[in-house]
Amino acid sequence: MGLEAKLHEIKRPIMVLGTSSGAGKSLTVTAICRIIKNLGEEPIPFKGQNMSNNAWVDWEGGEMAYSQALQAFACGTNPSAEMNPILLKPQGNSISEVIHLGKSIGTTTAKNYYKDWFIPGWEVIKKSLKSIYEGNPDCRLIIEGAGSPVEMNLIHRDLTNLRVAKYLNANCILVTDIERGGVFAQIIGTLELMKPEEKKLIKGIIINRFRGDLTLFEEGKKWIEDKTQIPVIGIIPWLNDSFPPEDSLDLLERKSHLNNPELKIGIVKLPSISNFSDFDPLENEETILIEWIRESQNLSKYDFIILPGSKQTIKDQIFLENSGLSEDIREYSNNKGNIIGICGGLQMLGTTLEDPYFKEGSKNYSEQKIKGIGLLPLKTTFFKKKLTRQINSESIWPCQSEINGFEIHNGQTKLDKTQNSLDIKPIFKDLDLGWYKENNEGGTIAGTYIHGIFENDSWRDQYIDLIRKGKNLPLLNKKSISYKKKRESIINNLANEFNKHLNLKSFLS
Image (cartoon, rainbow, N blue to C red; front, side):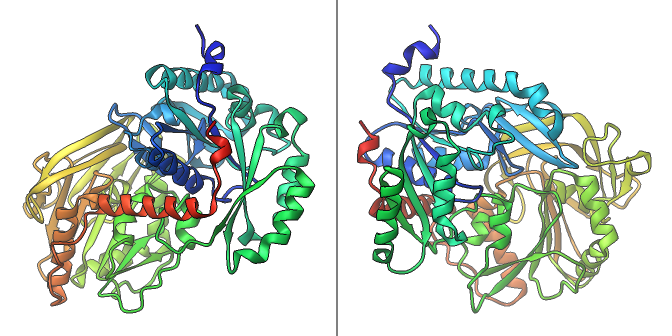
């Protein structure tokens, strides 16, 4: 029996749609997931299609968007690629990698995506929904839409908004961001562009990111309800907590308010940056200020710098070289600087990057083999097959501790025998997961393939203490709360704030 025949038996899903991208859908879903869990139900997050280079790897080695992984944590369940069956990872020039149920199955141009991938995409969404309900028959799906549900040039090929809502007969909430302005037009315009059977699914409206006295919007709330005949079920205030960013734009716009930081970190803003959630644990350190490095400059003000992951490593290394940042990083290293690269950042710290299959942003033959920054005697070759897996290992440096994280990369990195490699050492007992080198004058250069490395509390604390020791600062208090407990606290705070201002009673029947 197909899922269609069983839809009357399931708990009615809750779906969060937005009047635009960035309206707050991801965090709204995260909050609702935790609220529903606290009520004793079994929530499961779902987003049919997501476009993001901020990825997570589940325990089966499947890629999914990090936002759905975070929502799974809010539900108290393990993330699974079924929760995000289609992931599109932009590669630039309107080309994206297509991932179905966690596995890379090809690339597509934006122009050809719906022509080539619409039918298989809808089939994989239905397959995931069926599998979720078979494994969790008593669950309630909390579904996130994408962008706006009424992009009229795309709506006939919509895979993840109203098509899913109608298929599951979901109770839909429309979220709008009042901070952007034009909230009344956003709501009315979105609803007016829906067909009558689609508009009937909208059971509530949320006004998000309201600043000031909430009672000042009572008149606006009444106007919206009179005009739409849909209740405003929540006016959510502006929340100042360090909640995980929804996408790279949110991350780059985030401003730190730390006045007297003890350490200052610079993160290189690569054009094709990926997996920026790697830095969430550092964002939550009370003594650390993070700044983005966007252009060539003197880096000496930073206590350490990070080269993040990249979706287009060759392309981003060429950017570093042409912008002067490669030379800045070498100069910083010569002046006792501390550097750490993650995944693509590790690869760029090496001597050579070779891309025979055009997997990492090579445009022509001359770019298939290029020089890296040259601070670590490592060479990387990019192969056709991508490695995606969860990691459980043990670190050797800067301390011995259990390490968890995940890998997502095409490249295979080995010691460059043409260089002096006597002073490079492994970071982990699994020798191919990362290396480090101590500069003669002080400071360290390190690189690892492990995403989520900073979520490992002992490792993060010891690395930070290495930097603090070099500045003659006292070592960290080892009684500090672990990042994963902090993440739980952040999710709870988010849910509690939403719960104060959100009425979900009518959605739980």
